[in-house]
Image (cartoon, rainbow, N blue to C red; front, side, top):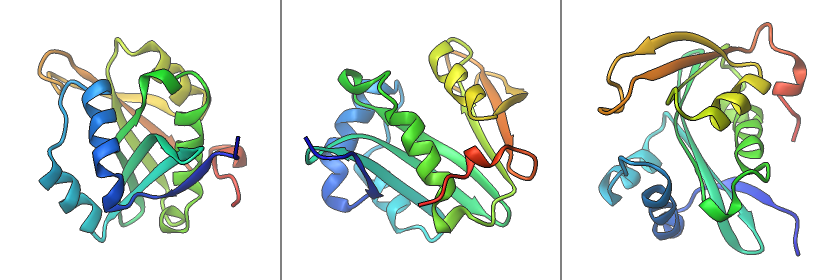
Length: 156
């Protein structure tokens, strides 16, 4: 067994990424959206690879001094093993996001596991987006990197 590797997402990862999305999120992006996102100069898309297979991914939009986690998903059979935490920490440590002062994300109020993970990383609830998911509101969570402990910005 090899050490998990966090690396930039490649076009060749899309079949696995899209399958993970379909198995994890009610509203899945299509291939055209993924290709557009991967080509964007404002995006940072990473995967976590274990033994040659993608276990999860994260996508951030980076604009000015803000980062927005636009997507994160872990294959169901790899959940609760630190994959999402590793992806979030790697994304925040990536040179592309070094200038970010705040990180935002939306999460379903019903997703207690994700809320606990984000809270453990220093994210706090800062707002509500009504009907964000169609069938459910979204909690807006924010991490202020200027005041967060350094453990939230691990070194590579």
